[in-house]
Structures are given as C-alpha cells and as structure tokens.
Length: 246
Image (cartoon, rainbow, N blue to C red; front, side, top):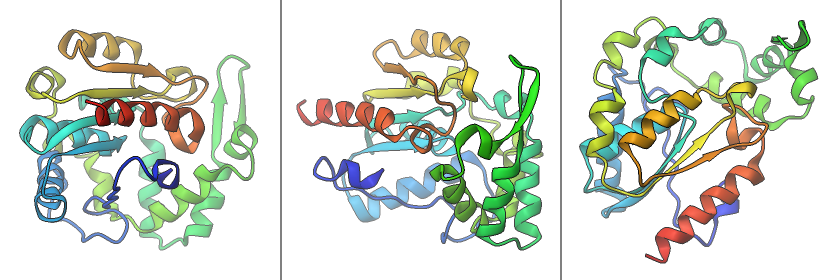
C-alpha cells in the first residue's frame, strides 16, 4: 500500500514490539505499544504526524492519540476494536493456532500453506470451504500473513487471547475517545465478511466522536487493504488530501 501513497506524505512504517524485526517486549500492554510509537515520533519525525493503524495498530493509534494528543495531527483507524471485550468474546482459536505455528518453528511458506487450507464456515449456505477457495490461491493476504506471523513473538499473541484483561485493562472507548482532538477516519470492515467493528460500535463511536469520518468498506472484512487495496487506499488518499489542504 505504501507505493500508492507516494507523493502525499513521507511514510514511516515501524513494526510494533514483538512484530517483524523489532525487539521482543518485556510486556505487551497497550500503553507500552503507544509509548514506543510516541518515542519513535519524538526521535525520528520530531513533529505531529498522521497515524494509520490496522487492527492492533489502530488500537495503539487510539491510545497514542488519547495520551499524546500533541504528537498526533490525524488518525486513521483500520477496523480496530474499540473496546477490549471484542478480544475477549470473539473466537480466537485461529490466533492460538498462529502461536502454535510460530512455536513449532514453521517457515513463512509452511504458515502460508496452512492459512490457505483453513476451513471457513459459510452460514448462509450451511457449508465449509477453505480460505483458498474463498479468496483465491494468489490472494496477497496469505503470503503477507505468512511472513508476518513467522517473525512474531508468540508471547505477543498471548496478550490478545489469554491475557487480554491485564494487557488491555485501560483500553475503553468511553475513556479514550473524548481525549482525542485530531481529525479521524474510521475504516470499518464489513462484519458480514469478517470485519471486527460492528455497526453497534460505530454508532457508539459517533456519539463520542461526532466529527470523525466513517467509511464502511464494501464486500471486504478485517483484512481491509489485503482484500481490496484500491477501495481502502482511495479513502486514505482522500483523508490525507483533506488534511494537507487544512
């Protein structure tokens, strides 16, 4: 997605602690993630910036914008849960399997192949198909996730499954959203296609963030740009241009 944004902004894409080639963390609390990014902005960017985060990254962006409003001049939230109860209540069996794959030392290629073979239940048709059948053999999501998971710290996945309470205790939209002062774009994946942000949460957010922009993606779920890059990029580009003209 970064090449599609060239010319609009100078882009930094740091991996969160426990992700990619970044150091493993001594903890995976949402506040610690936010402080890492605050330090990065202060050291390397040295001025307020627009922050885009997808999934966990968006949760970090929300915490960052609420606790360091002087560092964030714009926030793009990519289908990120607004409260930690979403992590507690959802079926996280696939995330637990991700952890097992990492601990077993599976290569990126092996993880990619297993992701393609994951079974997905289609309630409307009362049948189960594989992810490769649903999304296509060459969907970029598979390779991207395979590489990403192979580089992750398995302890990081505990934080979003079995240890949500201790790592996300302070992550509550009712407390955080009123503290955010910058322009916001919320990208919602379609819940019917696997999006995490429900329409109910969007309505709650509108009461707390009435001036934010909300866009419900069409026919794509939580993967957003991994499922339909053009649709998502067009919304981000529009938002960036608006901020540039202000």
